[in-house]
Image (tube, rainbow, N blue to C red; front, top):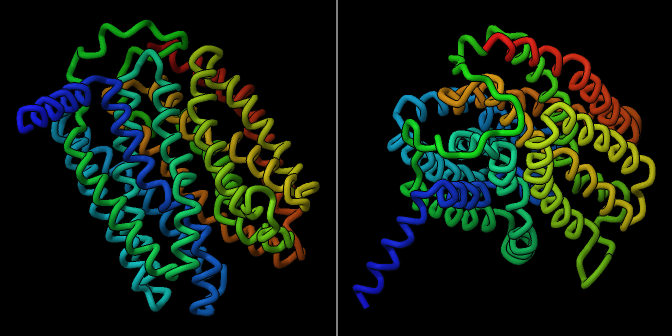
Length: 425
């Protein structure tokens, strides 16, 4: 028995050292931190009911989480790259596992807004450590299939919460939101901590045998300071903010929107309410978008894929705002929003590494990822627009317009700018 267990352990460790094994470990880690963002909407109304804090005050915790989850990633990414291939990913993800567990445990005990915000700070710091490291792993291990690999990794984050929507709601209903925060935080963070010790980045020359990529990639490796000096980076940053803000508004507000449409508790199939069905399907669509559009971009190019995805996204926002008041329409159009939003987390990291090289990829894509943090502070604006206009219609109009503007920027500004930069070598 001991010999058999030793053989199994040896085989698992051997499989984890391959690039596909590393990708799978990264995806699992992303699944385990997905609830920090995508499960948040389940807690908003119970917290409001328990403490009487306004939705806007509670959603500030979400904005703080997103800000810390993104704005600290350049530091975390720099540490990963500086510690090296063997130590960096392990230590950073282990740290992240501890912090994400601690963040939700703090939330479970929060009796004041200040403590709730502290939980967001701790959880955001840990979530960013795991996210940045795992995405950095994908772009380094798969130069030939960068869009697909990043998409699969990001899909773990986008779709992972679908596995636990029903269990979290069940625990909240049966034992309170505090219990759900405590036990889901402890278990998820603990497993991330264990998996961290399997991770490593490729050694120099280890990916040399990969097939040639079908999209143009730079032969240079730009340092973070060089990246920040390019107009291409800041254009990507602006585009990321615009698309991310529209998606985060939907991500954080799905439960309140369903409630205001008076359809959240309507049964749609197999006993599932509109909100439960929407959250499960939305998370699956959000996850599927990342490898799907990442894979497409590996063949037709990043900018053309952006135009297709964000153009469909603009249409999706308009449809939900105008026609989403029926339960099935709400589920369908919300899913379309998530399907055409989640791919930013595969397209932008892939574009960044194609343009600026792989050597400093973790820190460079982390610099770009801070755009998500900047966009998070637009989330409460949706509540303000809703209060000022008496409905969600103008919120959806604004988000649709933002997506259409990004389509134009991708095709007519980003594409020629990147072409000129990469022509320099």
